[in-house]
Image (cartoon, rainbow, N blue to C red):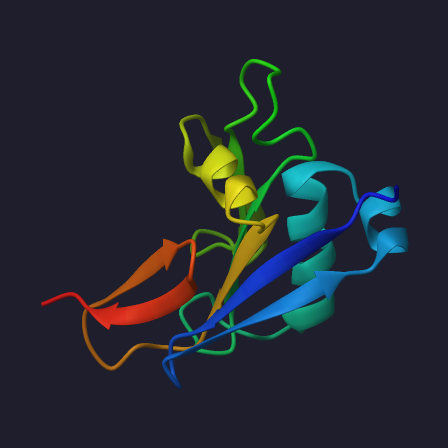
Length: 134
């Protein structure tokens, strides 16, 4: 059985969410959360986009072992264009988010756009939705 994955795309400007499949060749070439984040950053954020522009993106991905019995696989990697030097940045965090995303069928989340107010992302077994967070 081939390794496949889905990505949750969250458009804060329109308030919509969608799910996309990640091509198997992308999964083989860009390993792990940071690798996938860099791939999407290069594809979707052209040079010249400011770090705080709605056209910028934030990519949050789990690794290929997320939600398995291997210890430490709840880690996530966040990839973005940073404010300090206008270059790509990445950071990792441990916890349960990576395992949770994988348990819901997502390898990662792509945030794009700008919300008109305080907004929260709610993910459960029925899907994902943006809700008011005031």
